Amino acid sequence: MHIGAHISAAGGVEKAVARAQEIGAECIQIFASSPRGWAFKPIPDASAKGFRDGVKKAGLGPTVLHAIYLVGIGTPDPEIVRKSVESLTSHLRAADQLGALGLIFHPASHRGSGLDAVFDQFVANARQVLKDAPGEALLMLETSAGMGDHIGSKYADVGRLVKAIKSPRVAVCLDTQHTWAAGYDVVTKPGLDAALAEFDREIGLKLLRAVHANDSKKELGSAVDRHDNIGEGLIGRAGFLNIVKHKAFRDVPFYLEVPGFEGTGPDKKNVDILKAVRKEAGVTR
Image (cartoon, rainbow, N blue to C red; front, side):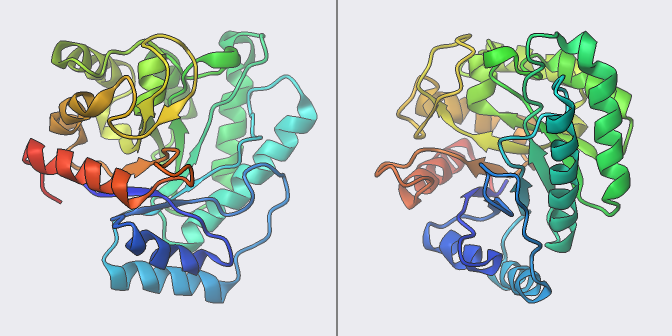
């Protein structure tokens, strides 16, 4: 179990390695371009090599890329769909270029149409991305909190999509805050056991390849996506101890996406807290 964080890649992806080391992160998640714009600037080969070499030298665990926030391959808007497929394709290629485990993306909203209405479209577009970006990097659907008609708050919906896409390069990222907000009680042992039994039944635990480790500012079942620092939210330190102890997460990398204690994003204090929880749980890297 590696404990890492979302790290800034400003000034070149290779610079993310030193920033990760500064806060004690053991693995890295980055954006390959601005998360709030459609423009994608290809990563220079020298920067990509610098990143790969840096990760290897630092002994870091799996790298993941996060897609931009604008993508929506299940939206009724054809222009958004076109841009989304292009963006995911570019980012998945970049993931392969960087030697990353894969690209994590939000299934996003069906805009009130309902999953059934956009299901075939979503599946076809995901297949197109995988076809246009051949390689080894995974395309990972992230579980959602459920706000704004977002797809993927229920494991059954994620499982339907994964099974229909039918590719060995499709996997899932579980976000602890989103899962909590979607109504899955990850704080108590019976609640977490039930949630992961459902995950295994509907998706398959073998497809759980990454965790976004975030505490929650909002209550269980709120459907509101609001992250908090580890131990400061409603999941709490005890909730994360419960999560880290579960065997399903034993070999899965954790990536912090917390606001930070000084409001600057994932920081050393959050990393250290989660490492202390890991130690208390008796889990080793």
